Image (cartoon, rainbow, N blue to C red; front, side):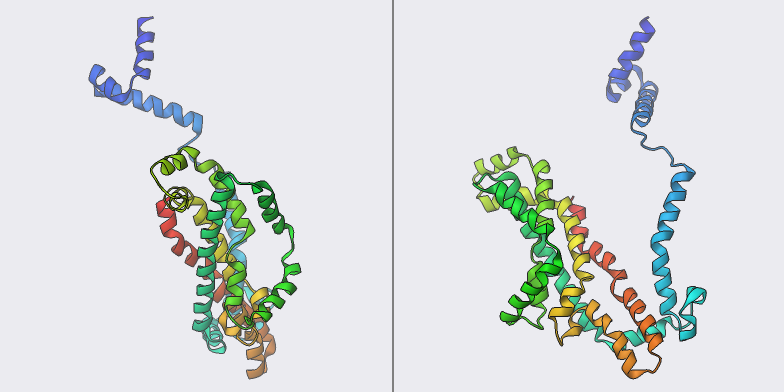
Length: 317
């Protein structure tokens, strides 16, 4: 009975106390037992089975296969090998076709324009969405619920329905053909407001806000010093979502940029087919190689660029 009681006391004591009372060996043994018990409860540290790895491999193959097909078709140097099974075999014209794609459009101008649009809209969306989310989640004002419901309600409106009035407004404002016509509608989003509101509602305790106010901070100072650091994890994800969405945006820039098609990568890439058609007789090759080469040029780097830009936010989390 005494041994059982001693064993229970050893498990209850901390490692420093056990080391002082019973020695290092007993303390190590008790620490291992605690860790083993924790692992049994949380399953942390257990090695995944073959089924898990098989599912992961299949999932990776499903997502990588379209990229492989794009690379393979973009590498074809003849229209006779761009269809069927032959299209899955790598050709020798990848570098040559990419060089043609760069030459057919003003690539660096389109790249700088796309980066500018994506960065400005992402930073603006994160800032204004965090500000609105902080207001909706932590401030008390009349009509807060109704206003938040209206903001969320705008998410149910299809984008196609807003294109015509947005086009008319941009045209009357003299923004037709300007890259600012792409930036201004994306400065804030209803999804971003909803995302940050839901996150800050649980992540930011009222006690921190009250402490900042007692210390003499203004409302905006409280937002910058208290709310923004607490919102960094959600802000990093919102930045990634917005950046990739703007990087791959095509429909609205295609309508509003007019003659300035080289201002955005997606729109400039869509003109490759026409450029090849006017310069070369093999329009079939252009229609296949052009879009797939553009996919590699425009969409593949988007995630990497967004992750690189969001690194400070992730490190601060």
